[in-house]
Amino acid sequence: MEQFLDPGRIATELQALSDWFLQNVANFWSLLQVVVLLALFGIAAVLGRRLRPAVAAWLERAAVPTRFAAQVKVLPAVLTPLIYLLMLWLAIGIMQQSTWPSRSYLLSVVASLLTAWVVIRLFTTFVRNPALAKTLAVCAWTIAALNITDLLDPTVALLDSLAITFGELRVSLLTIVKGVLTLAVFLWVAAALSRFLEKRINRVSDLTPSVQVLLGKLLKITLITLAVVIALNSVGIDLTALALFSGAVGVGIGFGLQKVVSNLISGVILLLDKSIKPGDVIELGPTFGWIPSLGARYVSVVTRDGKEYLIPNEDLITQHVVNWSFTDELVRMEITFGVSYACDPHEVRRIAREAAATPARVSRDQPPVCHLTGFGDSSLDFVLRFWITDPQDGVANIKGQVLLAVWDAFKQHSIEIPYPHRHLIIKDAIPVETRAQPAGT
Image (cartoon, rainbow, N blue to C red; front, side, top):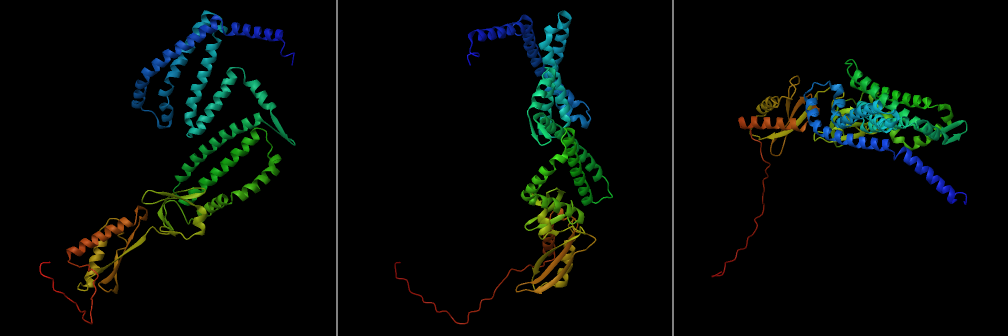
């Protein structure tokens, strides 16, 4: 302890630190570079603020291909850094021609860091996922900054020294960092490739929607699995060394994720037996709607009121499901009504059939039919049946249109829809006692 608290040694260390500071930081050329950096930044900020609206307006008028829309959209945001970068390299060139190159070292480092940031910022616009794009940008710029400042090799050596050994498997912090970065890149490539192949599959008209979705999901699972395996192998991790560990983890995950696995398997079964496919109109309990897409774990059902229900695949396997368009899109609807006993039932049937055929959504291939179903207490009871081919557009609205058409037709032909009535028969008279009112009241 006395050795570290020796006043002479402390004075020597402080003197060495002071000499280094005066030689490398507080000298004329270092302070000049700081002044140049601040001055050029102020000029770039003013120019960027004034030129940004004009550049944005010019880009809006320019005919830019759609695939480069994201890159063009970010140009106004990086206009100030670009101006600053051009002036920095110009200042570096002037100083290197005027004096020793070492006297513009600080300018060169800042210019290199800024160049790396601008290039990475432009390249990450090709990544659609904002979170992934930001992560890749931070990691890439960190590596570039360490390399520019000559700190990459010491950092790599430090990360590699922090390691844990499991038998023959050595896992260091460097291995984890490389594995995470490599896995992120491979997963992004796998996702982009799966989207591209899925679009190509959806364009094949010979495949049914169910087969298209099934092939797309299988391709995505396969590509993601390959990405994970390749990423682990690329960082030198032997998969056989993880066999026992992965087996134990797999058993634990199997117990904890039974529902997830059940929904995944149920989704594959639904796609294989083609009982549910995109475009079907289904009814599950109180939920009635149209299926826009099938997920790996759930089925999306959009109702007529705009609500989107995410129904687990297992529910579609185990519960009672009404598929309105399973084998045929032709769906029969029916409404009931009653007319007065004074009306001719044959004429009522004809008028009802003609009225039901007037809405555009009613099928012309299957004409409406009307049947007398009974003699009610107050009316002749009828059922009117008609067919539609687009249940995804709603069923309550088409019923309302048919009812209005029938109502107008009945009014035109003086067909009465009776009100319920009852006859009240009093067998015995009910005595009523009256009293005279006193005078003056």
